[in-house]
Amino acid sequence: MAKVLIVDDSVFMRTVIRDMLQKDPSLEIVGTASNGIEALEKISTLKPDLITLDIEMPRMNGLEVLRELKNAAWRPKTIMLSSLTSEGAEMTTEAIRLGADDFMLKPKDIPQLRLIADELVATIRHLITTSHQLHEKIPVLSQKDGSAERVVLIGSSAGGPPMLDALLSKLRADLPACVIITQHMPVGFTAPLAARFNRIAHMPVKETENGDMLKTGTVFISKAGVHTMIGAALTADGKRTGRIIHSNAPPVHGVRPAVDKTFESAAQVFGENTVAIILSGMGNDAGAGAAAIRQAGGTSIICDQKDCLVYGMARSAIQKNAVDKVLPLAKIPDEVERIVMKMAEVSHV
Image (tube, rainbow, N blue to C red; front, side, top):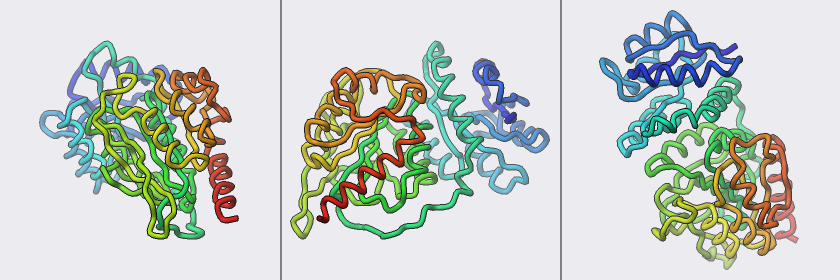
């Protein structure tokens, strides 16, 4: 049983988080703290495996706690709970830099707080059962720094981040493709998400910037607040590749970035050299994009429903008859590798 310490200056938040976590028999709530000073004292005596850490607190805030933990005798895994504000995003980025293992967004509306319960438990269990600091990097068999001729697209929303952890930790460093993740998030929070994934993935991860060229062995996170479109480009030797184009077009399905925008534009550029993966998420985003990829000769994979917190996005692809494979999350990395390597072999024939 994993021991968890809850750190938040709000009595209400401490109570809600405790109620969320107590429903999981694998988690034991060993205590709570209302500020950073109290948190450090309890970490020293209770030795929790993980702490949930608020950022803004009196006496000592969450960032100061992280600085102190760098030299502490006992250093638990840490998940930050951050507010949906631009200031919260900046502080979350700093928290990741200071060593926080993960973060989750704290909804502004009190009724929505309990809706994140499943995702919070899944994230905590993932952090406790994996040790990203100790995992061995997959050896690079043949370093490729050139422009991408193949692309792997991943779309996700609610429940997606823990699944992305599992995927990125398994994708090999020398995968001959560029990976683009479109995850529904508020503005400002995709940069810290990219920083977090950089610790897990065997390929470098960055938030998209307008004009970025797609490179083999690189992972991009679609920047929140704009659509990430893929435009056509040519390499110096005349081969077809792609580049990132940010669009301020209206939201699609109520979101920006929309998975459909990325999928549809990438299908036009990469055609049969496109692999799409749809993970957990509510709503209909991704269905039309998956259909465009299949029509272009690419491959669409959706995650099995039992591994998803919400199945709306995957179901939208099923309704469009745009699914080639339905796989458990654990089997997706190997299948992606198999498909991409086959694409690479064909292109060199």
